[in-house]
Image (cartoon, rainbow, N blue to C red):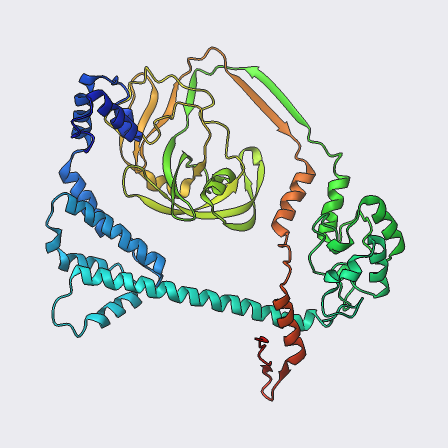
Length: 533
């Protein structure tokens, strides 16, 4: 509006500003208009005719206020989201010159009923002694203050969790650590931090560990090497401490001088990391055989799969636009690993096998949960997705000519570029597919295709005539490399590397081990550690 009223600009300049500010359906509406002085007013009137529906805009904002999600958990994040969304729609109604300042009683009732039980109780308690009716400003101030309180409390809870975690670590030290001093120089430090020990050559370090009868992995004396559950070498992933790592020549020499050093063994054993390293050595020869059959083929009809452009929520609440394939024949929803990384989603590790056509199987090792939403309305839905590297090839296989389809210009296409061969980021399965459909179909003449109305927009579906002279299909038959399957298994089972403790944490562990005792009730009693200053 500011650009439109700026008298220093020409209509051509205004038109350029207008087109640069549009995207999606609105931009598509003006694609046929050239940037000229005369066309600016035509473009402006087209947009006003399409989108300046005051009644619909007001109804949409009021409906959004009534349909604000319930706050199910006493959380500052949920409350802030409720406040922000409520204020957004209320400001829009004020800008439309509606008397929202007279709606306090109604808006308070709606907003309070969206709160969790604890927040409702606190609100009633804060206003019970007030004989006057509370205002909307009072409620919003109460909610902002409550968000601040909950946020401060969540910080305290985090500190308690960290304290509990460290306390648990100290309790475990009773069973796992009986040596608090260096067994090599008798100093007050661990062996892997001993400067005298680190001055030795790697073969001599192996010999010293053998003389001291220590585990070559964690440097403790209460178990054998093949029973150790500690972390492995960070350089080669073998079952020894990182300070004992050496190149292949020195390592062979060390292996010959130490019976406790790990040896190559092709059989499966508990030492999963060692087996993984060996499998990488012994399975190198297992190459993948691929048979490729290529031939020209042109079917009379080409079936177009239904796609839609949707918004998907990232880790920090940011919405990212992506392309979704609608598949009523899939029991699960899928998402590409590339999009998961872009969204910053962490997810959870799983071990699942998904079967497809001709009983072909794919192993899945990650699952994420996030929210999808429509570009054209308030539809939102939380879904679980299985993570794949690639869902399918480009859809469609080749670009499709749509000049003779005679698509209506007054509808919102779910995917404006459904005819362009592009990758798919998300697959929406049968669990959500039927909930997306709405009443409404448009048959396209001279084609076995139609437009189906959904909450994501109108999707193109069906088959069209094949106008290409030559289409190439490549059929691949592949024997899966055993090494790939093993790597997927290890990615599920692999534990995180153990981190190094600080000097203060080591002191706390030592202090606990040396001062704890049990009282007459069986409880642990330990002296509080105090700093020197």
